[in-house]
Length: 407
Length: 153
Image (cartoon, rainbow over all chains, first blue to last red; front, side, top):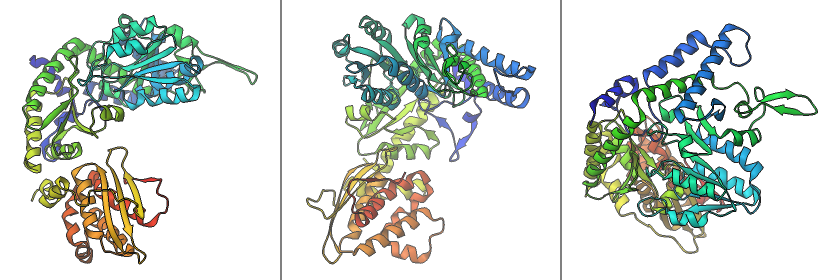
C-alpha cells in the first residue's frame, strides 16, 4: 500500500479532532466527505477579500468573481472530460440535477406509454423523480433486478429495453452496496434502443476516473460535498444538443435572453438552467476541491481505496455472525453489513462511542433493503484519507458489539 | 457504569432478544402505527380495552433497534390492567425520564421499572427510539383515526 496517498490525511483539519475522547475515525464518506484546507482557505479568502456578485457587475470585483466561476466551470469540464464548459450546469447537488433532467427533459420528451428504466438498487433521488414523472405522463417505470451479490442482471436489462424506452437512469456506484455498474455497456445498449441515459455519479466522482465522452453518457451528475467540496453545489453534465433542446428548469434572473410581457426568450445552456444568483463561493470551492483530487490522481485514489476495500472485507468476514450485504465483483470501497441479533443503529451507537463514524439505516435506498430482506444495514464507506489502522479500529469496535450484546 | 453500559443494560438487551407480548391482537379495540421514516423503526401496537376503560390486553409487532424494541416490550408489560388515564400518565413520566436533565424524585418513583431507560438521555439521537412505542400508545388510546402514522422524528 502506497503510504503517500493517505499522507494527504494531514490536509483535513476535521480528521485531527476527537470524538467522545477518542481520535475521530471517519468512515461515512458515502454520505459526505471532509474538506481539505485548500478548499476551506479558498472559500474563506473569497469571502474575506474577493466577494462580489457575478455576471452583472461592471466593477472589477464582480469581474474577478465571474472569472473565478468561469474557471471552476472549466475545471468541472476537464474533470469529466466534457467537450465544452457549456455542458456543465451548476445545481445544488446530484438530487437537484436528477430533478432537473426529469423536469426539463422528461416533461418535454416523455409521453404516455413511454418507459423509464432504473435499477432495483437506486438511491431514492434516482427513483422518486422518475416515478413522479411517470405518474404525470402516464409512462411506465421499469426496474432492472439485481442478483444476490448486488449486480445488475444484464439479461433482464436487455429484455426491458424496447423502442418504448425513453430514459435509462442508473447509478455509477450503488450508495447502499458499493456495486460499480457496467455503465459503458448499459449506455451503449440503451443508445441502441434509442433511449437517453442519466448516470448518478454521486458515489463515483471522487473515487474513480470519469470520462463522459468515453462513456458516451447523455447526462452525468455528482455532488460537491461528496467530492471534498462544499454543500449546496453539484454538477449536471449534459450533451449540448440535449441541453439546448430542453426547456428551462426554474425561471428568473440570469437565465433569460430577452424579457417582454408578450414573450420571453431564454439564454443558451448552461445559463438557461441557472436562474438567480448562483452559490458563488460554493462554485469556487468546488473547483478547488476538484483540482485537489486531480493533483492526487483518481487512478491512484481508486487503486488505494480498492486495497482498503479488500483489507476491510476480509477482516469483517472473520467476525462471527456478521454478513456483508452486496458482494459484487466490481465494487467501490463501500461495505454494508448486518450482524445477527443486533440492529444497525445499535452498531452505530456502539461504534460512535469509540470515535468511529459510520452510517446506519436504509441509506435512502428502501427498495434495496427490501430486495435483501433487511430493514437497514451498517455501512462503512472509505476515502483516500482512511488507513489500514482505521480499519483495524473498526474491526475492534465491531467485535466489541458482540461483547455488549452477548453471543 | 459507562454511558454505553447504562444504555444497553442487561434487562434492555433481554427485552430486545425476547420481546414480551410480541404479537398482533385480532379485533383489537385500539390500534396505532408508529414509524420513524428516517431511521426505519416501525411498530404497530394493539390494545383491548374493556367497557370500564381498563387495558385488558396489549401486543406489538414490528422491527427496529434494541432501544425501540425493548421500550415497546417493557411498555406492554406495564400497562396491562391499567386504566387509560394511568397508561397515558406513564407515557408522560417516561418522556420526562428520558428527556429531562434533572429528573424529580417523584417522577423516578412513578417511573419504577422504566428507570432502566434513563441512560438513553445521554444519547440524544436515540431518545426518539425509546419514545416511539409510547407515542404510539398515546395515539392508540386517544385517537379514533387508525389510518394515520405517528412518528418521533
